[in-house]
Image (cartoon, rainbow, N blue to C red; front, side, top):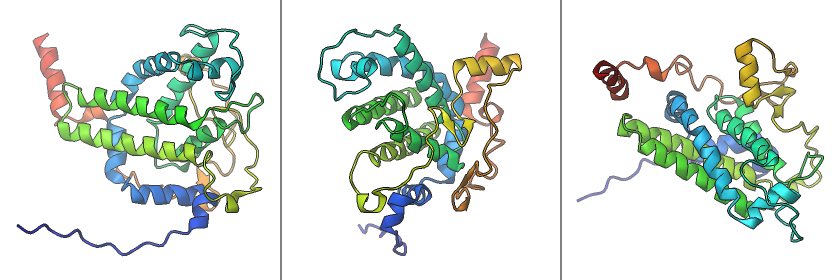
Length: 289
């Protein structure tokens, strides 16, 4: 029996310096290495409603986990897991600071269901990594990386099990959604580690990261939608977001490199897919009712 040889691709040149000085170059490289492309974007777009339905459960499970251990719960008391002093208070799931953080995690997970063809999507994931190292905050928050990695693993585990257990989705579609989500989560993991590790410091030492905007904002625009924002939109009021800057949606070098990648997907809606077995099952169940 002969094993077919994999078709060889020409070796690509990757400029090492650009990986540490250009977010666009870093994302291009990660997308290429992970084969993140059209199929993944279609899977994320069509599966967004299933992922969003899981968000409340994911948030509750994550915070139950964080409050099970003193070293992670301490981040909500002292803002730093490196602190070894006495704890004044023990937060629980109904503590004001926990309810506040849950709101941000819900908004963040919803952001993961937005358009990954926009550079803004990856810029914000990079900013999330930066904010956890204490940069750009009036009251610095420094979460040691071991807890970041463990937290991302919990999120991926919950989403993977829930999607693969869905009673009406095609297995092929389940696999596509799980693979696409996994790639996004691992790119997010990289965009955390780039702020923690020392690789490439010879290129970034003394680099000016510009003005650091407050949490949930990017390029002068509010990019995380809170629960109250959703209510405001339903009521027809605005969220008070400032207008986007002239460079919004573009990289420093010009147009976002992923523009056009999602051609034909923007009109794709799960509820309109008449040929899917999950849709047929929904119709059958309604008829039986």
